[in-house]
Amino acid sequence: MPESDTLISLDKVSKCYKAHSIDAVKEVSIDICRGEFVAIMGPSGCGKSTLLNLIGAIDRPDAGSIIFDGQTLTELDDEALTRVRGEKIGFVFQAFNLLPTFSVLENVLVPIELNKAKQLQSAEKRAKELLHRVGLESRANFFPAQLSGGEMQRAAIARALIHEPKLLVADEPTGNLDTQNGEKILDLIKEFNRDFKLAIIMATHSKEASGKADRILQMRDGTLLLVESSEPSGPRSGALHAPSSSGGGATHTPSSSNESA
Ligand SMILES: Nc1ncnc2c1ncn2[C@@H]1O[C@H](COP(=O)(O)OP(=O)(O)OP(=O)(O)O)[C@@H](O)[C@H]1O
Ligand SMILES: [Mg+2]
Image (tube, helix red, strand yellow):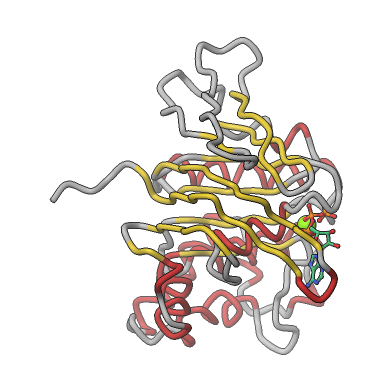
């Protein structure tokens, strides 16, 4: 059977933090294609991280369904969900989250050691290639404390990609960086998106960051409001699919126009 173009499909996904009665995500429906770069923007507290955690299989919704690469995540037990996360999804966070007592190379290899599916030897070769690609070849044996912020985030990107995921979930990846280093990180993310057909879903407060995306989703109060093309006057405009109830929804519009490199 041919592979579907859709990598992730959310149908009326909701998440409530019950202890505090906070509806963080409300009936969100959206499709994301293989290799698509999607940015989520919106004010602090609108539910961006919660939505990313649901898409990244870190958390489970209370209602609705999530299909990822043909598998219905909402039907999987914890072990199977962990496997999907370990094999198909990479993560980059604002705070880098490197392990302080591990070298840069060891940090990049952490997902492989947790996920025994691949041989460590070939993983090491790939880790070195990735470190070269992110410009950290000469820092492989450094510890995180010996790196600059931008270098730490570049190491985190290499770590996120070591197991060749289909999706990179990036939660404010430039939030702790100055403009110049932030730009470098975004360029790298965009490069991997383009060269490896890696789908990206990135939460950001930055217009520059969202400008790299194929599509920008605006989120307010747990709901996706509308879909924009990142090109100001490009021919693509995202279609908002009519929500069948109160929930916001957005369908994918395939990227067909030229990206501004
Ligand atoms: N573990 C939790 N328990 C209770 N409430 C939570 C929890 N995590 C988040 N929330 C609440 O859910 C809402 C959405 O939070 P979320 O972290 O998803 O927002 P965000 O859009 O990522 O914000 P920011 O831009 O500041 O990162 C907020 O009102 C927040 O207080
Ligand atoms: Mg957040």
